Length: 413
Image 1 (cartoon, rainbow, N blue to C red):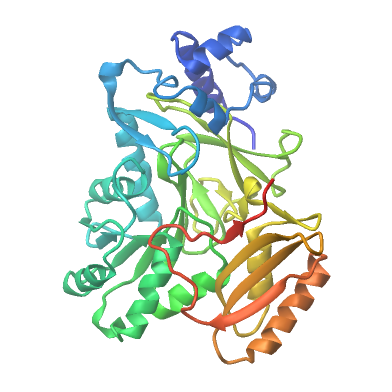
Image 2 (cartoon, rainbow, N blue to C red):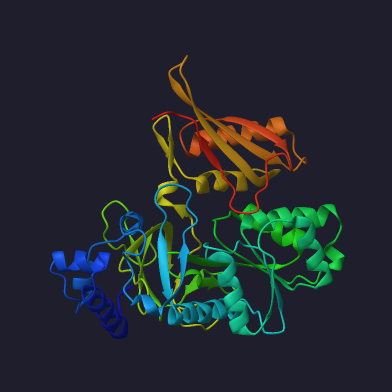
């Protein structure tokens, strides 16, 4: 996917804004004698940026707009290392709301809907992003924030909520509670807008069936506005992203070269009009692909496939590289396996080898012993190693109000 003429001019303008300041990227570009871009080839020679740059620039080193124009900051949800601080101007906040409202509209949500917002507020971009978009659309916001499931369900019933927004983990928790309490007939839920973590088809189907709703994947990250830079339409043929605000590339994560449309790789984002903290060629580590051609919904916005995982989610056991998405693909093909699982990795010093324990919830229709054997066989044939497998009843593994931690590695480097 190449930059069009307008996008190229916008990138050039952003670079010139940066080098006119004493910001982190302004200094970096001046040191490298970068003055702007006039072609796709020049653009692809620009250096990548990443989260490490943003940490090096802490707290406000990436700020390009004058301080008096910055109306808000946000920070990413990471729990390790120096925080990443992103400043927003009034226009940035409004642009983000416009994109988010566009997401709601793409999902068929209107100003007649009542949107219950369960993601967190504060420095994290999720809750306030969902709310700003809701208000821009003119719908009714029910700003619950995370947790207090008892109150969430009461408000869902009493307010006749029509749209739920959540992480997939919390949406599953709510769905299970609705089923357990036999509340479905008391609800008016029609749609769910889900973001912040990747989720497999089994989890999607469980949430969809237990709540009886349509589900939509929303995409975004704090460094680039937040959630709301893309969403799938009702045809579920990929995520439409807003190319009047961002330029998206797919690169080979090892070589850094762009891959042809349709091939899988790492998403790299460039903000075209962001004022507070523009980013050029920001590596997200999210794995997807550009879907060529137009969607049958008629929208002209380009599409990417659903996020397959992150390039930095990879874990290695006995010399074999694996991703959580591969585990989910295997469980999808095992009759009786649910969407919920955990991977625990440790070192067996007595036998001088790594051990991987896969704990999976079973629905109860199929013998747990038979399921465990089938999972081991598929693992061996597809991935080349055999984990220890334990199957437990549904509801055994912990549920999360935020993101579910799937992989725990106890090995000492």
